[in-house]
Length: 73
Image 1 (cartoon, rainbow, N blue to C red):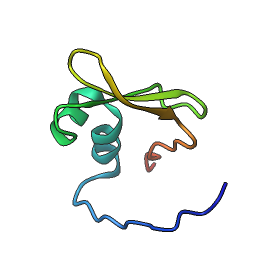
Image 2: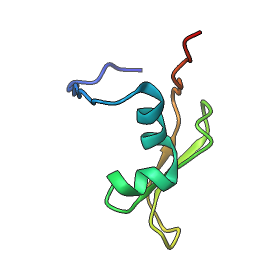
Image 3: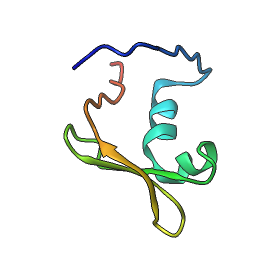
Image 4: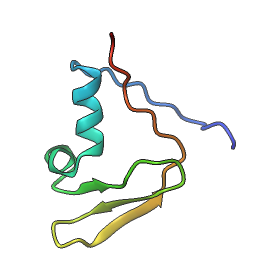
């Protein structure tokens, strides 16, 4: 895979778990993505969709990598 030409860095004041949930759970993604949900099982190679409340997919793709935060013991 080619390296991206442009990279964004974003700092979020949150816990890793809350940030992961905000990206992966539709009930939260609607709050941050203009009422659209990120829908997937988040396994490598799985389908990913950005969908409206009417379940219309606006953007579709595949999960290339997914690494949920690890809990600290």
